[in-house]
Length: 119
Image 1 (cartoon, one colour):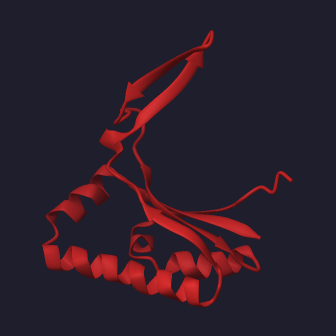
Image 2 (cartoon, rainbow, N blue to C red; image 1 turned 45 degrees about the horizontal axis):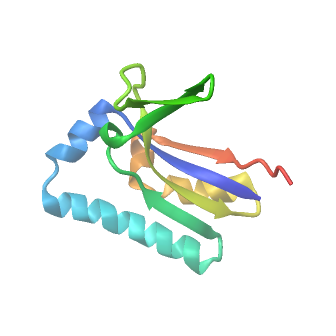
């Protein structure tokens, strides 16, 4: 079954990240690399990506056939998606094992959600 491991970020976590040295940030990326390689080696990783800053996002709505966009960030959002891994695991417990190894898990900023099979 497929699961989406969502890495969230909030203003406190972003401030903490921004205050880290380049070496500390590199170590965080390296931790992600280790987890990513383990998921790939087990054949469970489908894809994983880091996302650009939320200020670069656009919110899309369509009214009466007209497409409208709003620039981010969106004030009502306290946490936003910073990156993700899409995995295909035997069960949610296995996806949680992977998620728990990510550095952001120490701050409660990881969500694991089953992907619906709409076929």
